Length: 125
Image (tube, rainbow, N blue to C red; front, top):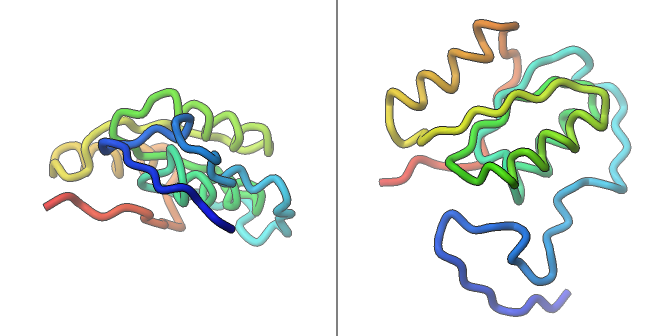
């Protein structure tokens, strides 16, 4: 597939991409491989992180979505997770900051215990 070159200041906005990423996993059918598990996904507001969040939900997991400040993108991901009948928790904050990272990981763990963690971003240097 030929994709046009694109440039955005990070963090980028999914809605500004042309063509938009196919990150909603609309053709993916889960098999219950993560039924009743809990997942904390960093960078889950868009792109690969959104695809992972939706795929985990389709596999039966509840999802906590950690993201920087792309609230509209994160809400969209949460809506996709909830459409699969799973719970979604949004955790806005800078994971490059130790305090923000600890707070983001403790909140969903304290609620129900996270048994699966998938990180789609790396800390900024």
